[in-house]
Amino acid sequence: MIYAQSIEDQKFNLFALFLKEAINGEQKYKKEIDEVLNEVKHLAKGEKELYEVSKEMLQVILFLRNKNEKFFSTEIDEKQIDDKDIYKKMLSSIELKNSQLINEF
Image (cartoon, rainbow, N blue to C red):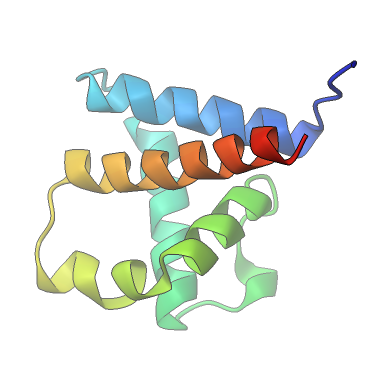
C-alpha cells in the first residue's frame, strides 16, 4: 500500500523534529517552537480568536490546543513548568496522534 503524506502531516513531522532537537538541548529551533507555543496558549486562554492565529502552523496549533486545552490555558503558568517539560508534552501529543493514524490502517 502506498502511503500518501499530506502537507499537514509534514508540518506535524517537522514540528516533532524541532521538538526532539530542542529537548536534546539544540537551541536553533526554540524560536519556532515558542511561536507555536505562544499561539496555542493565547488561543487556549481566549486571548486570541481563531482568525488571528498563524495560518502556517494552524493545524498543529489547533491540535495541541484541543488535545491539552487545560494544560495550555492554566497549568502551564500556574505550575511554572520549564520549557523542556512543555516540549516533551507537546511531542508526546504529536507522537500519540501519529501512532493512532498508523493504527487506523
